[in-house]
Structures are given as C-alpha cells and as structure tokens.
Image (tube, rainbow, N blue to C red; front, side, top):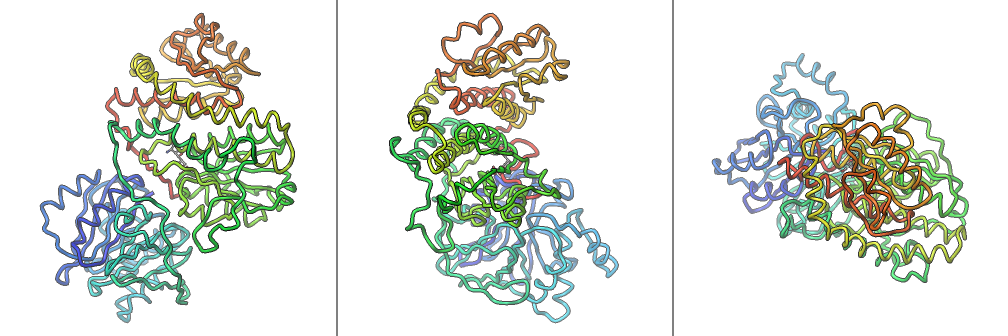
Length: 624
Ligand code: AGP
C-alpha cells in the first residue's frame, strides 16, 4: 500500500528518487518524503499530500547527495500529516527508515523504547524500527547485526529501507513476506517496491526473498537470511517494459485504459488462442524459463486436471467481481463446482481444500496481501494453485507455477478497468482449456464460443464509439446521492462492478444487487431520487430481470438500463438506455461493463473528482 525507493550511485539522488516515486504513486499518495546523507548529516525532507507537494519542497532545497531513500504513503497508523510522513528517524537523527506494511507489535515495542528514553515524534508504527535499530547499533556499531536483531523482534508483514548516517555508501533493505527488489546498474544501484520504479535506468534486478535482508552499495548487493546465512542469486531481467506514464490525447489515465480494452483483449486472445480451431494455449511451454523468473502457462498434467473435483477462487474488489463471473463460466463449461471467496474473509477460516482442489488467486497487481495470504493458506492445505495476474514479476507470480498473465501493460489509474476485462477473458480461456482437457463440452458449442470471443474487441469498439451519448446520459445523474445497480446471472457481478466504479470514482454511494433480491428488502430505498441501473441482456433471465425493473419503476425510481441494440421492450420501462451490440448472454459481461465504466468516469469528471487517484484509495492494497 506504500511505495519504497532507494538510490546509490554517482548522480544526484533526489531527482532519481522523485522519478522512482512518480512510478509508485499508484501505491498510495497521502504523503511523500526522502532522506539523503550529505557531509555526515542525515537530511529528511517530507510533505503531506501528493508527490507534487514534496517536489515543491525539494525545489527549495539544494540536496546534492548521491545516496537516499524515499517513500510514498497510504496511511495505516497515524493521519496523513507531515509528521507522520516517512522517512522516520531515531532520536539522534542518525537512522532513517521507510516502511511498507504493518508492524503488528509496534505498541509493545514503542512502550519498551519509551521506557528506555526514546523520544517519539510521530503516531506511526514505522518509527519504532528507527529507534530499535538505533538501540542495537549503539551496542556494538555493527549495522547488519543491529538490523537483523531488530527485525527478529518485529511481527507482521513488511518491507523496510534503512540508512545509517555513519554508512553513507550503504542502504539496508528488509523484506518480510512483502515485495522489494534491487535494481543493478552500472556503478549505481536502486531499490523499489516494484521494479517499475527503476526500469527506466536498468532491467537487471534481484527480488528479495520472503525473509531476507539486502545490503546494497552502488557496486551491488549482498543478501542475508534473518538467521544471518548469506544467500546468492544471479540478477534476473525485469519483465516490465520501460514505464511511460503517458496519457496521450486523453485527459485521464482511466479514460485511456477504458479505451485500451479492445487492444488488451486482442493481445490476450492472440497469445492464448491464436487459432479458434485448436486448443487454448494455456499449457506451459516446455521451453519455459527454468530460472527463478515466473513464466506464463499451466504445468498441471492432464491427469491432475481431470482429478480436480472443486475450484476455489480468492480475490478482492474488482478482481472478486471478475471471479464471480468466472464461477458461472467455469461451471457452465466444465460442471466443476466453483466457490468464490472474498480473500480477506479466508483469514482464520478452515478452508475446505485438499489435493483435489484447484485454488485460483486473481490479482492484477499480484501484491494484494489478503489474496496472497489466502492462496498461501490453500497451498499449505495441499490445494493445487493457479494465479491470474497482470504482473509477471509480482509476489503472486512467484507463488504458483500455474499462471495466466494478462497482457494489459501497466494500469495506472487506481480504478481497475482494462485489468478487469482481462481477468474476465482469462476465465473464459481457462474454462475452455479445462473443458478441452476434460472433454467436458460439445466441441461445436466450444467453437461457437471461441468465435464469439474473437469478435468481442470489435463489439467493444462499437460501444466506445458511443461515448458522447454515454457522457450526456451520465451528466443527467451527476447530482444524485444514491444509485442502485442490478443484474441477474452472468451480469449480477456486472452490477456489483458498476456500483464499485461509481463509488470509487465519484464518491456517490452505490449498491449492486442480484435483481431478484431487490424485492427482499433493498427495494425500500427506492423513490424518485434514486436511479436504478439494470443490466438487461437477452437470455435465460431476461424476462425476470425486466420484471424486477418494472417493480423498481413502480416505486418511481429513475430507470436506466444497459440493453442490446434494437430491444423494443425497454422504451416503456426505462428513461435512459445505454446500448451494447447483440451478444451471446454467456459473453455479455465483456460488453455490459464498458458503458458502466464510461458512465462512472463521465460523472466523476463532471464532478471534478481526482479520477486517477481517488481519495482514500491506493492501487495495490498490500496490507491486510
Ligand atoms: C478496483 O477498481 C479497485 N482498485 C480495487 O477493488 C482492486 O480491484 C482490489 O484492490 C484488488 O486489487 P488486485 O487486483 O491488484 O488484487
């Protein structure tokens, strides 16, 4: 949920640190700060609010140091203020720390340190680390030992970067079940939560293991376990393309990423289904890299796949909504029972999984703590595992040998759009792959669906061509306070996703319901002030969904629908009609979500909201 960066080399550190932080703002933007060492002095410069506030501060400071650490924060302990911004230091201003994650036992440690005379300046859990390292360092002036002793006392999952003013050519980094990578350049080294940050400087990287300490200088890195044992691993090439934070002709990344969805689908389909007359290409290639870098594909054997009796999916937020649709898709094509769990609800539960279960973790970032924890728990109980992620170098990608890597490129906007559609298409591909491996579906039906899937990008482009109509419709509703979304079957999760998009982009309260559920209570909220958005697609549940909409209309709700072009039944019931091209109900979620994404975007834009970085949010939720 926060971003850690570091730099050691021959260039001025501050401009490099700021360029790295710009690439990590997606991880949180409540405050930002840097610490550098100059002429034996530790300089800490930090500011609440967006990175731009720190940049303004730095312009007034002529920092010329060539070593430093930086941080962009999503607040967990302590309000997003200057004093709680990272970096944090010990009382003497000798040790500086930036932190990602949570120190669960910080309260006890803080009390102990205060009793020893430490003076705390912030409300954060992080500051405890600075005082703890300082305390142990002053015992025998051995920084590695001090860091090792300190981290052995910490509970929780976290990543740290630490500097000691007495060692101006070294950064100490600690990873404990988190994500931290070291970039290796020519006579310079980098540190970052995500290799995206330094990809513009180097693509050679070393990923820290689950409980590991890195001692970084400009000439390289040494790795140690928490037990002191030294480790050695060759650098790998980061799979991240040089990151260009470029909106092109768009005003917001969100609008650009919604518009990229047809391209993303074509790239994903071309990679995994280049020929509809042949099996889906999800099996891992024999030539897949045997090194530590993860590679796309499924390594489970046909016998293992045939032996799967149950599938469990764990995910959060938008990925959870995609997974709910994935359930319907997989069950329809393979008859394998699928359970979808909100990953955070798996904590402390007895997960009923075993060696005949396939547990699928869905996470575009591959760093969501709740999802990772649920997958690790399932794995420990003997379940087969599979990951669907947009980041091949993520924590998730290193946790399983069965991977579907979506082809979205980096999604900058905090609200997920193109990665959602890519997760959906990954479920279609996976369901078809499983059906083929298990001979579970009529080949003719499968071919029909594959051909239909190949047409989706073009159909999405037709919807994108209606932007102006959708913008005009959206503007009619920008002042409402509450909105209800509803759908049935494949598009019940579409309603949930539509509601989430409106909430997180415009801050308007919205709820998504199974259309049949409205009459069991939620219908009480309806009156002339409440718009109801219904996803209405010809298929098995069309008539019942239309009836549910008429029940809402009878309560004077403002009626909006997403329906297919040419549907003559909708004009009597709905005031506003957003259309999609005719499509098989089975494939309709790939289209129905697009008008809802644009609807929410245009409302948020009209309200002047911070579309790409909504308040209180972060792109990657790496705390539980
Ligand atoms: C969706 O718009 C949000 N950004 C959020 O719900 C997100 O989908 C969720 O945090 C899961 O993220 P992940 O896919 O990176 O695991």
